[in-house]
Length: 639
Image 1 (tube, one colour):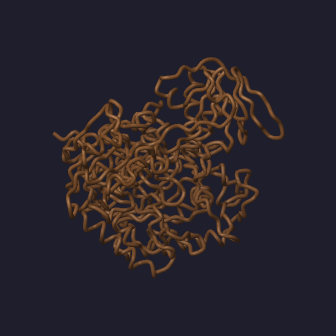
Image 2 (spheres, helix red, strand yellow):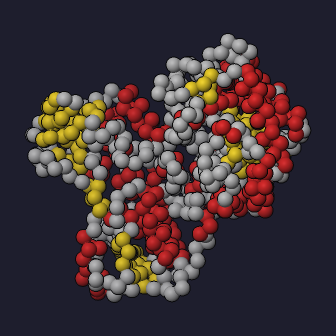
Image 3 (tube, one colour):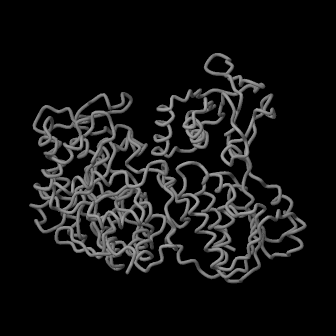
């Protein structure tokens, strides 16, 4: 009997029959073109997930109003978008999955996009204390509401014309419909505000209008917040009452999520958030409605099976796991759970612009699969067994090259082992294990405990060398940095350096924040100094993880000296330039978390010695894991 037999039961949402209980929820991907049209890259992206065996795909949001669109996102405010949408629907159907189109008006979610065109206002039900003074807001009136309701109805008609199987109404996370449902953002005194029924009126009008326009048998799902995760937001009792009201208005299923994306960290829970954090809310909704209930939010296969088996929800939406491994459903169905490339919930996929995946270098590049055999098979020596080295070696071997991988330590993983040692990051270690399994499966020759030199390369005589020697921690150029009380963050994490007494961490990037939390939770006396803002490293922040870490630092009352420069370290203090003054901070231990620099020594020694040499990953330029893995894959595909 299959371990995941409950997940692979058929199920219904209205008149739509699904082959299993797994749903890919709507996730923005930026794969449309600048005029909001479907592209080949988008078709490839969704085809891969449909082919991978998921029962239902809910596409990224399609915007229903011309004034409320963004380039590179889907839109359905005009009939001209129907042919492109039909192509997408047909692609998903060809691979055996059902497809639902999510309809949305941005509302306050426009803030989360990080870009507001000049002259564009944020549409809100009420001007409240939650609105920022430097942003143009407009409180919509009843004529606006009538117009937007009609926009949703017409967009729904286009969905049906394109041949899709269902519609999902986006009414969560702070979008326009969501902001009407929430008492935190809706302070109206007319028929659209005040009572639970009045706040649900806009959503009900849209549901009722869609059903009247395209037929009562066409399935419509509504996705709502079970909890806003903001002060004064929707309560559980209100959410349950809303669910029954929306069911009466025509919803064929209720999809439960959590959080206002402009303020909450729970909408897309990162590694630091417990698994299945939203499931209990869906379970409560299931007790008060007759239509199916969908749950989501950091759910792995074992938990998904338990949810369905125990009747906590009828369907499970798994977003990031399907980005990490499009074939996840097929692998589970075929009993190949060990072959799943598991999501680690690092949230690199959420970075502004088009994010990338730390474990799947082919995310948004599905057209480059399957990996093609090399035109000429070569003997390739890969130096460095971190993520970049392992990923390069795997793809090189898959392409038919004769590959050897050399690592100076006693185990594969490199700096990734350090990252995996941090509390809350147990999923991280799974990626190393996954790559090691592939290395063995493809018969890559592994050599550990051997530091490769130029002489060793000459001795082995490879045709190609891929250098993936990683990076090493940076030092500060200040007096006292070599003192006995100064240690590197990586050594603290590994347990190689002891933290004594009053401790100052220099560096406010994620590693500094994580380390400060970890030590403060142990009862250590911790302060944090950063020359930039909290969490900043010169690149766009991943905001959900940032909020989790920042909130925890605040809860732990860790003193933070931001935009402060370290001037000198003494035996028992650190001198900082903070604001307009120079101040000493008591410090028995100083921990450096100030980034890393590439280890290029071997690469430089091999220049002119080896005819074909490539440098990949952090030893090329330190970035995050997603960049290292993609860089390795990119190089491996061209050798």
